[in-house]
Image (tube, rainbow, N blue to C red):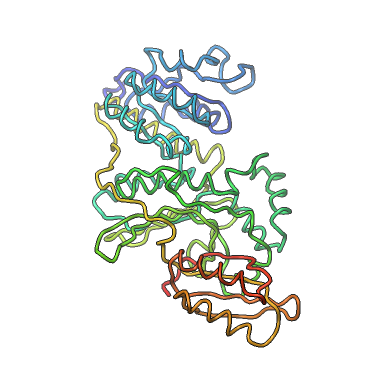
Length: 437
């Protein structure tokens, strides 16, 4: 044994043996020699917490246990990897590990979005690591670039596609012309959507990830409750057709950015919603279940991270990167980046957020409709960029694209439009992102 690998073995406990946990265990077993060389000590699997022990799970039965608490408490465990998901039990187990002086690697975005502060404080108190690269975008490295590579820069914006299920659905709708319900069913059949897809299609998953990204990028604690959220369940095939006519597509975006105020102060916005994206924008070509995140730094400029945002092996890759970092710190006596919350910026309400809008409405096809609609936009201080009529007679529609306006001004405009006698319905209101106009 060389001097570099003379350090005692680092004991690892894995909580969960689903798609990600199984891949983590496989990598630990198949690449043990390489991992030892990279860490400077062997990584030894002490046990795996499972709900139902059994054969043919890729783990010797003697390493399987249903008693996760006892596994975490073992003296020969140095690092705990949590990949079981959920909220209450993982929170209890992670806090137990941190309070016992063990480092933690987790992929649990929902937990982090609600309890990052509590977990970070426990890690700081006991001088151990809390890593969570896998919580945001699967295999795509986003957390580490923000916390380390860009630590000396000022990040102004982080935006991207961070949910593969919704991206698969919207991409398929755009390519095939199928409606939302039909495409969602196909996504479920192919394994891209859960039996209950609510967390994905209504934006909860993306909102949790946005909270994590905003917290790191802007050195401010942001929870999932601070993130404005809309899902994709109301997107229609007609919306995608109209988007194409405007040289756009529709993506569910997570956007975190600094928002200047007229008096020179600064707030931040964290929001998730479906938006029109110009076809020449880098995010427009991200299709299927892939994810991409664009980071805009004051000095670094625009950086884009692209790849597989979910799946057992891709997510396990991110987990293993964190595990190696935590193990190296155990060997060398160092620590990774701690929580940075010094800025304490306030969250801007959605009504104050400026962007462009796409408004689709059914109207009565008669003289004077266009001028009356334009008057309502003007009365509420919303400038129109383009307007187009589609269809005729009872099926007539007006599609309006605005210049930049605040969300509150647009909401007031839509409310006023809905009251006009010749506006049958305002069928869609979407933001338009990725333009400079």
